[in-house]
Amino acid sequence: MIAPRKRMKVIEGRCKACGICLTVCRHEALHLEGSRIVLDDAKCKHDGLCTFSCPDLALVLHSESDRRSEERLVPLLDTRDKLIQPEPGLHFMQGATACAEGAIAAGCRFFAGYPITPSTEIAEDMSLRLPQIGGRFIQLEDEIASMGAIAGASLSGVKSMTATSGPGFSLMQENLGAACMREIPVVVVNVMRGGPCTGLPTRPAQGDVMQARWGTHGDHQIIALVPWSVSEMFWLTVRAFNLSEKYRIPVLILPDEIVAHMRERIMLPDYRTGVEVVDRMMPTDPPEKYKPFDSRWQTAPLPPYGRGYRFHVTGLTHRSDGFPTGDPATAATLIERHERKIMDALPDILQVDEFETADAETVVVAYGSTARSAKEAVLNARRNGRKVGLFRPVTIWPFPSGRLEQLSSRGCRFVVAEANRGQILGEVERVAGRARVGSVLQADGNPIMARTIERVLS
Image 1 (spheres, rainbow, N blue to C red):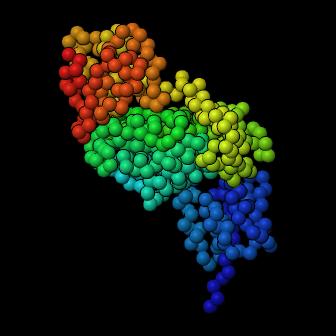
Image 2 (cartoon, rainbow, N blue to C red):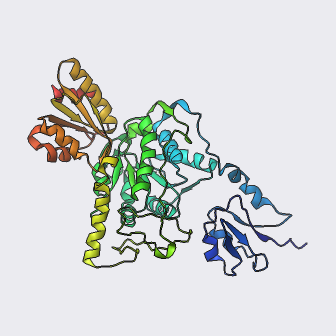
Image 3 (cartoon, rainbow, N blue to C red):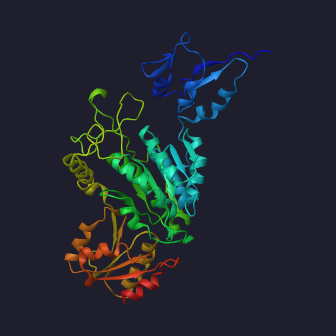
């Protein structure tokens, strides 16, 4: 018995008319009509080659007697336009789960990663959640590939994220630098653990703060956010995506192991109405005049590949059209623009949390889970009549030097508490001077306790 011949079909409910298939079809059988792809059955050879190019599985070979390919698409077809979410309201949730939910609420629809303690729960949650809403999850062979995959997905117009820890973050640095040079918006979650190398995989630390700023080589800007609670794991993930899209820059989220693994109460909003989402800016110029790194814009619009805007991206120093150049003046202008677009936006990017600093004579500078201990130490000091406050940088890069300078000009003394050997300590000393800065530094895999900070305050 001869099997019935299969024929090409465009599933309109899935096709978003990205146009990728148009560049693949050798027979000019596919063309764009308005906002949909149309198949010319007379020209089509029905060889199925174009099916491999479609990111949404909208092109299929089928026959009347074999409908398995269509049946396989039914779950995704049903959920493409449904934003499935937990019931809005009060939940008891792990930090890693809150991070995944924040990514979903912000519009993330692609996750690539490699499991590594203590960030694996984020990948696990994304692997369950993304298929429910028509997104894509992929586990790759290592963190190098994961970072490259999310950069590529972002260029196709999909909000993308990865999560890692310690050694995995080290592997990502080259592709992270490529994303900085190419101005590709992506979000990277690095759940900090003890190190260096394999170190203490299951214990908390805050030793990746300087790597977050300078891990990739060259002069570049980066935005890094540090949550201290389950609620901030949700909301700072949303903020990370919004800042990334707004300024075309990789944004890092740096929870430590405690924050990622602890469980707390969290009030979840309605994702459709209670979350402000920044989407990618599209060009106003016609495709033939579009330049992806146009110096007229500090942050140039970035259309997705396949939407008619053809442009070049490279890790080399490049002109406004994306093509490489070694011209010193062009190189200087490019790097200066990268810096200027972030420095000019500091009022929008910087976020700090202050507690009892209005009359403080001593200010504890701490972040992440260490700031929770620091707040307890501040409360205890206040009960004993000492004027102590807490300064918590939520945006840790760019470092919020301006506000610290204001406190320093008032004559405040500072105590830096961090679970490392002194990475933010140098930043505070640069602002206030070494003579007026004390420290509580600990890198043994144990959390810094409030009583340890209190001993330095007394």
